[in-house]
Image (cartoon, rainbow, N blue to C red; front, side, top):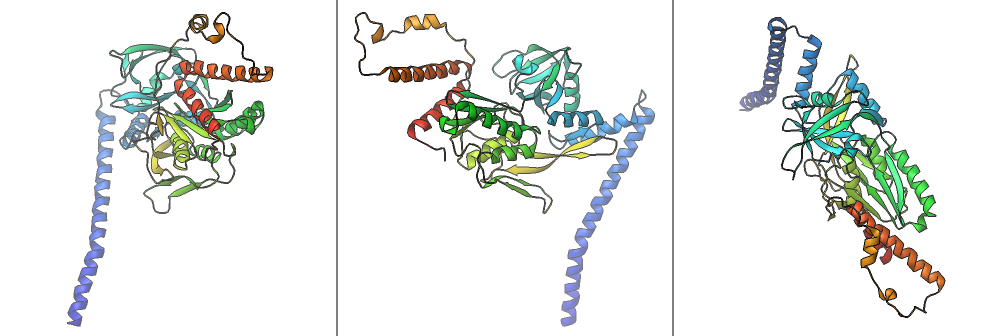
Length: 438
């Protein structure tokens, strides 16, 4: 019986070991057969296609097709595109100034970049581009579609756009330009510091740190500031490490983001280091459908740590990490290698970041004529023979007048940027209630 048991155990063990090996060998054989098939097709094209073909271009197309079949963000970067991508992350490049992806065979705009030809021409996040100079984009890869939109600086290109809510496609004429990105723009709106982050390039965190210091000094010190607005609307993302640094700028401790791949031991977690550039002042983060990738990392981290109120509309929902891997011949592949997760453990892939307060941006309106508005508004002071206010000193009158002018300025801002004005009002409410934003 002992011998029989040993034989049985040996058979079971051999089966358990051999079965996976056989399956693995079968898979390897299948892969080699498919590679032989690829070689056969390649040779037939070279020898029998109706025209001569460039073998290098044919192989590049095959590589790109293999990568783009995985997801919209993986792809092959020929040497020229790889060089241009490295230039883009430094913050200067030529083009129209739009971040795009592919949807149902056409180009979908993730976001226009501030101050670029696309922004000035009124291109919006969510627009679908179907034709370039009358040539359809259907049937082309994303790289080929982007190539059609490129061209010499100063040249004209006409895009055919399909927009939700607009019944018919329409054409938009743009002049190509050199795009010089200013990663962060800072300014004061009353007592509020507005930090407009347009992209995550190599200089984003340094621009942010310098901008905060300069704007706070302009305000007369942090005690004169009621809070900060981090404007990430239409920010398509960029360098992952810069997103981590920007989120860290507002956090004292805790996880910022984690990444998980399918390779054991490759998971990463990024934590905040002590030091908050705003010293705990209230923060409002603005996002919209054009906020993607790195900007979603920042918004989600500040939201999960209850460090900021997120205002606007749901973000784009790109929750994957792409690694750029150089290849022989100066090209590279851009391959999706991980998903990222927020501090609470949620993935925003395909779902996006949901604002704490949903605020739609209404169509921009023209400000009414100031004199006509003033003529319609009457108060007690306008009545003939009304009594004056004898309880206020001249200094108190000046203070009240200054506060009234600030309120009127915010009201005018609502006509230009309702979401931003809404965020400023939130910070005013914090200040009035003595909140510290934590």
